[in-house]
Amino acid sequence: MRLISLVGCLLAALTGSAVAQTPPAKVLRVVPSADLTQLDPTFASIVITRIYGLMVYETLFAWDSKLDAKPQMVKDWSTAADGLGWRFTLRPGLKFHDGQPVTTADVIPSLKRWMERDVVGQKLAASVAGMEAVDPDTFEIKLSKPYPGMLFSLGSGIGQVPVIMRAKDLAGDPAKPITTAIGSGPFRFNHAARLSGALTVFDRNADYVPRDEPPDGLSGGRRVKVDRVEWRVIPDASTAVAALRAGEVDLIEQPALELLPLIMRDPNIRIQKLTDLSNQTMLRPNSLYPPFNDPRARLALAYLVNQPDIMAAGFGDAGNWTACRSYFICGGPYGTEAGAEMLKPDVAKARALMAEAGYKGETLVFPSTHEIAWIGQMAEVVADEMKRAGINVEIAWGDWGTTSGRQANRAAPDKGGWNLFATGASGPTMHSPLTNIGTNMACTGRNFPGWPCDEESERLRQAFLDADDATRPAALDALHRHLAQAEPYVVMGQYNQPVAMRANLSGFLESPVILYWNLDKN
Image (cartoon, rainbow, N blue to C red; front, side, top):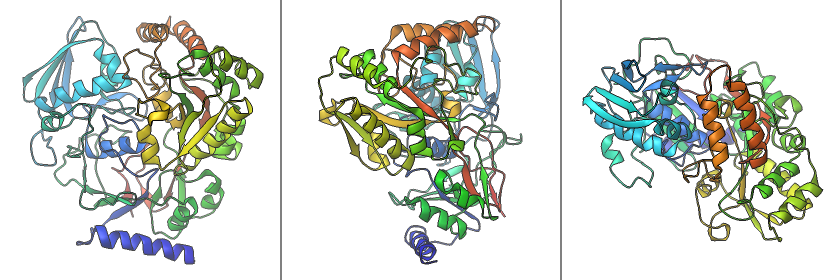
């Protein structure tokens, strides 16, 4: 009881210090998966920033629960007979949180910026010949070749999300993230209530006009049914669960899996999953610097990874995870393991490959965090396996904000950069060669941190995207066999991360990320 009362005091202190105004009628109190440190969803692909981005901003299209694209900011659209011209008209009533209307002058630079940074956007950009405004509500995209994935891409809910931002926010240095947090979405970001490392607050946007359709995944009417959403950072998993059981918080985005048996015994708590596609864990090497600029060293990691040991460390009971070496999610539409069958743990093979790659015992830097428990637990097992193969690895521990921020650092490992890190991504993110952020090996330097460059991988990925229904299976097989040797990252397994919430919540939607519209608190 003392633990619960301490949690209550903490929550009361946060509310009193940061939100000391007339209390809103209905507040949804959430323990987020991590603290929000990045306010630009086109700059960073981390999950907590994507969730925030979809609350504060909107996209032209949006994926439903089946990952099919539906119109969101768009009212109607048309396509030229040759497939090279697309015209889009915005729906009425779109306003930024400062009261200014959303126009095509905001849409076009937002899309251009997204196409520069995101794995899905970059593939679309390769077919775009130009974009131009017809009037404030209508714009056109001209293509150099047909691109059947246009609407799917514009509705992307993974990676760097194609949100529409104010043009004036995009006028600064494109290499710097945007921090204004003024979108047109159903929630307003409350800058005044923000307490770094403790509290993030979103208020219902009373001026927002939702679509008429029922909600379905990211698509449809985004009707907010609470007055405020508060993200309350509680790093200790047991403390978070105690707060949930006491009713001091309403939802935990990522409850510790080892505590699920305790949670599930409580009749006042419900467990819910986001999607039928399992999440994926990855070990990502930095391909800019030795030894992992050599594919033999990356392949060595694949021979070191013992999936059952690593997944058990991160996710406990075997019912929470599965071994799988498919880059595109076992159980998904493209879940082949072709070419990866031989990648069994083999320390001698790994040691030989590292030597062939020129590794001579240099210290390898491995940033990680205990703030997201499973990431740190997996990192410890991976580091131990590497040491048993004679690899000198040093884990650089930090909070999640510091660790995720370091991943974007291209400097040499001994100058603030890194050699490898462990992380995870959602099933919808990784399920397809188009959306998978890790298998993009384009030699542009704009891919997911790690920046592997392999022209053959990109040729095979494009062949898959260009294939028809009859030729796509063979194209997928060829791509996956090549990736199993090029090893842009090592698949460490799959896991199912549920959401835990009080039983008095309703309206939870199946989606690539957790959504806070349609959720009601009875």
